[in-house]
Amino acid sequence: MALEFTVPNMACSACGDTITKAIKAIDPAAIVQADPKTKQVVVETQAETGSITKAITDAGYTVA
Image (cartoon, rainbow, N blue to C red):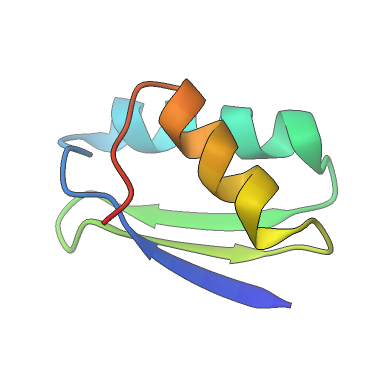
């Protein structure tokens, strides 16, 4: 399923890499597109929405 998140404090591509790694730790097969310019993270995953949100927040980012 495709999930879309707004991450207001994602400032650069390194932030996107950190978020991607956090999500892939939960679902290694996830496809993650993180765009610091639009602050959008799109995830194609079989994991629960709550677990993806928790991975992003545990990595130090805010999900709006």
